Image (cartoon, rainbow, N blue to C red; front, side, top):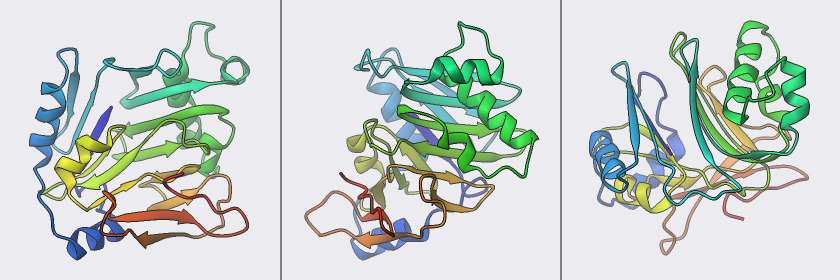
Length: 236
């Protein structure tokens, strides 16, 4: 799955900008990145949302235990990969039909948060049990919400393209060729919300997250880590 967002939606993280500046390397534009993704799979589907957002996904090479899915409801778009162990109880909690899957559940959870503020954003992901990564874009408010589970079982990466777009994908090689060293693994157990304006841990929401410069030999430009008693490495 792939999500690409212009700077009018999300400002490129300073840590990734710095990583790219330390070790300049080839990049391509956001449009070229999306085209590369589409060319890699005959079954790939892409969506242009306004002038500033592109989403794409494919079922090619997906795990049967961690499928990818897409849904949109009330201008809330969601890409989801993985599986929730407590999907059944969450469907009851949100009053969803028995046929509802994970991506529908995440949209409802986000919508409940948005409409019943001031609940903390970590409540959207804090009660999800299982392996997952997802990208939510709310067109009505131009809000982006991205999260990955605390075990890092579903890979998620983010980087900056040549034209300054922020890209999220489950394929490190795809972003490596597009973002150069302005690339990092999205830290497990964390979420990013443009409504909050920063990266946070949903397990330890008060703990600071810092970016450590990666070594020259690594494909990453930086590693994001949650400080405190429980330290989660972005690459474990």
